[in-house]
Length: 424
Ligand code: EPU
Image 1 (cartoon, rainbow, N blue to C red):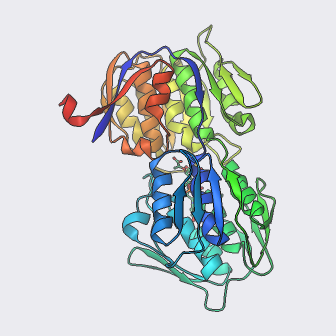
Image 2: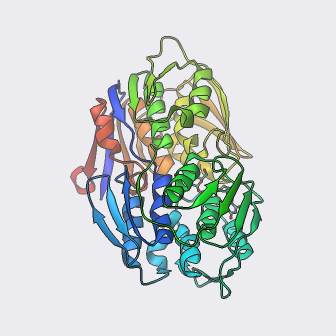
Image 3: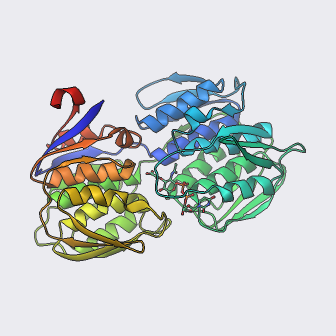
């Protein structure tokens, strides 16, 4: 087992290249099941959620060949089982895309209930509603989503009661090969939904409206393989934006789509941070005057991402005055606050709103990554705090950040992974 140890405070400089987006990569990887052909997927981040997705595909019978560090060939013609065991499916959230993908290709699936980060209850009622509207009978039985459509899957009109990324992706996957026109209303608009639709359209699907709240899917009997490159990870980019802003550093962030970062650049600009935007780059400029406190509200895309809530809290701890984060997506997203308090942060939580009294210097401490983005926030806090911060349970961070230690070290942070027996 390893920890991350950081000697702060850091002064970062240089440039960092953003990897492919986790949440697009896992959706596209499981979408290859519906394609029933050979696909080549590039710009896959080297993270444990991607490695586990590839393993789940292999266990189902797909042939997975590594072509380079970021590129894999996946042949799903050889799939022999529609079962994803709970022991593996339960280790990540996106494994439930196997359900939508198998329903559209085979009309049947048996998938262990998903795991993923613990932000309180994460129901899947909207996924089940979509599958049922398309003709599947769905049972949740002994930890499995057990579904079959004896008369085949059909097109349907689906209205989601809440904006759900996973539900929208699963509905697209389940609909893509059904006869007729499926319409999804109140769909999520995240860039990874557009990426999934682009991938499927490259494979011969007919999906329009991805990126808006109404998505139309004209089912196609057959899809074919393609070569596809995953979009850059906007949350990884946002995390590096905060790394620079919180440490008062200037860094260049490369391989990004600036449009995807707009809610973050706008909100951070309110604090006084300046950015210079290129076609695929963002320069976070060195701070010349004190930053101002702000209020942040997390919302579905294009709103401010809930996946940037913990990292943003670290920046707000560094700004004199009272800032607030209103979390509207997940009811238990503030589990990281206790860890930040160990570093001296003064944060009150009331009714989904964190009130942060900023400007009190963070002190190094031993802390835990309580989930993926919370772990990233601990890394950022370690960069800011004076002394040696050590972070436990870093497997959470490795689920979603490709080479975070190496990337920060290349920006001149003093950061390393340390085997636990080496420091006890
Ligand atoms: N919800 C329901 N019923 C459902 C589905 C969702 O009530 O059937 C509710 C959830 O409880 C939540 C809200 O709808 O309150 C939004 O949940 P959503 O379904 O959008 O989240 P998700 O698909 O489970 C994805 C990302 C998360 C990210 C959220 C929100 C993946 C694999 N995961 O989760 O990413 O926080 O969307 O943007 O795409 C991360 O990358 O660290 C991460 C947690």
